Amino acid sequence: MIEPLLPPWPERSPGPRPVSDRLCLQGILFVLHNGIAWQLLPLELGFGSGQTCWRRLDRWQKAGVFDQLHQVLLAELNAAGELDWSRACVDGSHVRAKKGGADTGPSPVDRRRTGGKHHLICDGRGTPLKVITTAANVNDVTRTLALVDGIPPVAGRPGRPRRRPDALLGDKGYDSNPNRNALRERRILPVISRKGCPNIKGMGKLRYVVEQTFALLHHFKPLAIRWERRTELYDAFISLACSLICFRCLKKTRT
Image (cartoon, rainbow, N blue to C red; front, side, top):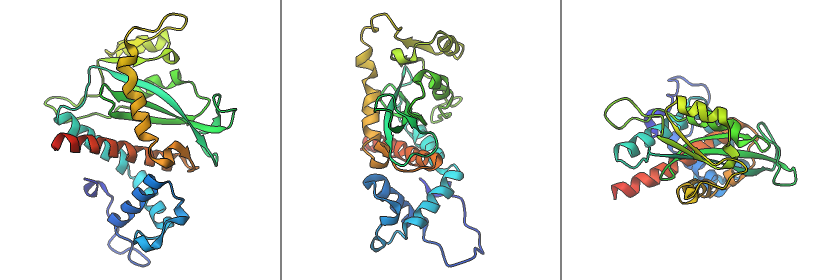
């Protein structure tokens, strides 16, 4: 599924013959699953050096390979009827950033240590649709519309590709009347608890899927604790992790 999305190598590239894309992808997946530092990637595994895999990850991210892969897998799930567009759930989660870097800041929930935040929107079954990385001190409510508008067009069904859920569920951290009006303009029903009022009854039973998705994302060690200073490479890991989650769901439907 990835091979058709990869940018071609020039026919006459200088230097020695590059390591094959398949081996570099295996090295990238090894780092994503184990959280090992690039420079400690064992050469005995045959994936090339950590620097080789790191450069290949950078090259593929600039070509948009991982976002395209995520979109292709979402289309496959949509064709199989495994996406629940009746509602979408949003939430945010803090992560430590050991080495700092772009899009990091003092965490308000971790003694102001340097950290980041994952802003996630998923469908009613917990399938990740979009993840945005920001500094830890960025309020969730400021990324509501960015998450909704960031959902890629998902094909797989007759008609135009779908990009909008029917309703958006959020906790009190997303309480904003301007955002509610903007969601209604997009024909999305906002189901968001208001500050100072009791929570909407039954919301927990519908929103638990977003916490479940965060648990799946943070199962990948480089995402649970951020070591990568460059945001674009960190986002490449996030997109690849979302693709792996979608691929697992797709395998379950096929079996």
